[in-house]
Image 1 (cartoon, rainbow over the protein chains, first blue to last red):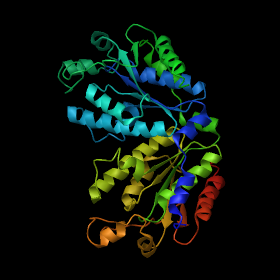
Image 2: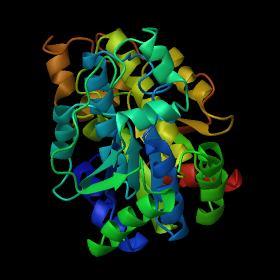
Image 3: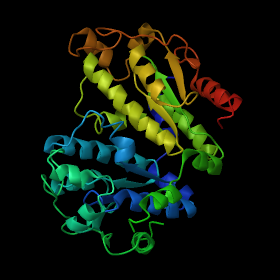
Image 4: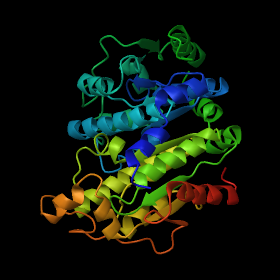
Length: 199
Length: 199
């Protein structure tokens, strides 16, 4: 079996083009960024649902399935956030290679960290989606009660309160999750994917 | 948009059962273990090709796409190997949740590390495949020239030479990659998947 190892290897590889051809869509990474409470996870799952209904292979990576698993050893210091985003980026890259339209929902506050993820993906496959929502609105909503805790000093390094957020300079898509409803935001993302012939 | 956050979330989640129903196969993790040179990657890609031709969603995680990316910060000490396998296990779990039959090809020499991966997946979804091949055969093949280097002391912690390998005690599947040809090994895995109504 090993005599022809290289030949066999070449014969058996399934590549991304082949996967995309069969699934009738391209695979890309939709990278959502924004404050806690801006609606990233909600939007991510709503996009996933719409794509799924169009028969696309799709998956959401967010705090719920990453922070307790792959990144359970990491906290929220700048260094740990950097490593968190690095790992998510590397994992997302493999999901994209597997032919999956991958949607990530992480605050990802630092430009450098997001750009590093962009740089490991082929050109055009990293699509930055800025979930723009004023901090006051996020804090007013405070769905998980985190802002209140952060204001009381019970949570260290909380983005927007005690840790910086660097908005995207030139994101592929901006959605106003503070003023627009969910359908409108999802529609804007789908429109982009259609216009760029990704789906 | 956020007033009904929880309701919207529930509406939009796409779960594994739904994915599996649509793809007409279940998603599981095929965990290959064995010495360097036992043929794990070759076998993994051959299994992937066969599954792909049956219209299955499938993907291979191996040293080629993980060691330079997600785990580029890790070496080969026992501690780093443990963390490497932990991360691969967590990532593979998410691929399985995404509906993908995931095939991993890592030496993964320690029983405890493999059992930890088994424990984070639902019962029946971790399928351990022992790529059984005598060390002498692997060393004789020495496809990458690693055994020669390890014997000369140029590589530290090399499994089988300067680092232990703990064979599976009760693997779901054993393939004799030292004596059987590739087709036979692939066939044995496919047979298992069919018998257990995974595909």
